[in-house]
Length: 355
Image (cartoon, rainbow, N blue to C red; front, top):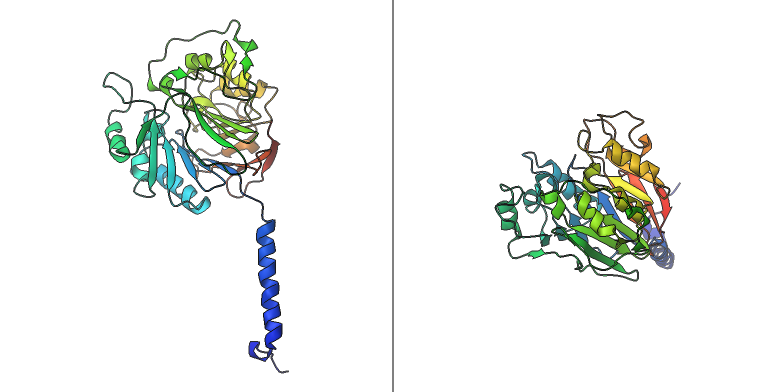
């Protein structure tokens, strides 16, 4: 049988076939789901690193994990930014506070990928509690690119058709002065709320961000502690309700004041704990008690408590203590009406509606 070659096919037929292929490619592009907002909760094993990528391809990295000789955390952030998100640079980087587990690897990340703008809460003084060894290194890489971010100020990310806002709700121990979130108002949980001993560490100075994308709202308060959390929601809840709550301070019981957690009424929580760091019984129990909460994710199983005392096993990214650094990804639809949460690259997404 004679094999038909390309040259034996009539030119008109070849042109017609090319047109069909071109039309199919155009249709496939038109039918592809438009981009929304992606949020990666990266496992830096008891530290914090959260990467946001907008529909316009802009990026915001909040914290960067530990400084290590093997560059573990810097490499994990770089892999997520370049391979998973397709980024060429980090447009905005926020250090919530100057403790090693939150800003340690930024000096190791900068040689791997350009970081354009840096934000933090203050020029540190010798008498303050902070990592005095790493801070000068941070100041060196941030030189000429750094801005002190104050409560009420915003980080300028471009909006597409769906409005996008990143507002600082607390910084250097000072909360915003006016309501900023949907559903803000009188907080009924404030009555009889107990204070704790004043926290003089840099945790209490943490930057907190409220990120809104259409109807979707995400709250990240770094390692903010009990008494300052109280100021954000009492006597009035200035934050309103949120869809996604990054459990504060890795799930520590010196943070996650019930008056705040109950007031913001999250639908989904994500705890950036370590196998042996935070993820306290009190914080996990508080989340489980919330009527609003539909899923409580953890980056790690707390190996120091029982399986039943952790969250649902299916919602824990890294079950074994010797882990491979599995992340949790939140994908918000282009209109901000819905979002999904999945573990790693192959996890089954769980769908939610923005409230």
